[in-house]
Length: 248
Ligand code: NAD
Image (tube, rainbow, N blue to C red; front, side):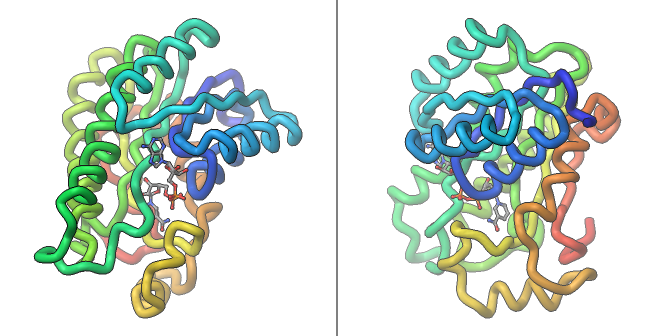
C-alpha cells in the first residue's frame, strides 16, 4: 500500500487512462479526488471506486476555463485542505490526429493548446498552495512527442510543452521538496485510440522491446510509484512508459 494516507487529485479520470490510474492509486491505498469535464461518467467512476472500498469523490471541471479550475482548487482547499499528489492526466487526446500539418483546423489547434498546455499549468498553479513537502506531481505526456509522430501535430506540440513545463516546474518546486515528473506512454488500446489507423497500432506493437499491445493497466504501477515521496530524486525527468518503443 505505497500510497497509504496520501490524497491524490487525478484530472481526466472519468474514463480511459485516468480512470485506470485512479483504480491503481486506490489499490495502493490512496484517498482520491477525481475531476473531469464528463460529469455523469465522473460520478459513475467515483461511485465504482467507492464500491470497491476506496475513499473517492468527483468534482466537475473544465480545464479550458480558468474559473472552473479555481473553483476546483477552492473546493479541495475547503474539504481536504491539502493534497499529496497531482496527476495532470486530462487532455484532448482523441480525434486529434489524421491530418497533415497544412490541414489542421485552427480552432482544433487552439482548443488542444488551451486544455493540454494552459490547463495543465493552471491546475498546477491552483493546486500548488495545497501541496506540501513530499508531494509529487505527475504530468501525463506522450511518447509521440519524443519520436515525432506524423499527422498529429497539435497534440504532439502540446505534449512536448508538457515535457518542457515539467522540467521548469521541477526547478521551481524543488526548493519546496515537491517533485514533478512526466510520463510518456506509448499508444494504448482504449477508447481514445480507436480512431487511430491499424498500421499505427501495428508499428508500435512490433517496434516495442517487449512486443505487443499496451493497455492502461500496463503503465499504472509506474505512476503509483512516481506519486510516492521516494520518487523525488527523479524530479524533472520525462520517462517513456511504452515497453521500450523508444529509449531516451
Ligand atoms: P481520453 O480521451 O479517454 O481521456 C481524457 C480525459 O480527459 C477524458 O476523461 C476527458 O473527458 C478529459 N478531458 C478532456 N478535456 C477536458 C477538459 N477541458 N476539462 C476536464 N477534463 C477534460 O484519453 P486517454 O487515452 O484516457 O488519455 C489520458 C491521458 O493519457 C491524456 O493526457 C493522453 O494524452 C495520454 N496518453 C494516452 C495515450 C493512449 O494511447 N490512450 C498514449 C499516450 C498518452
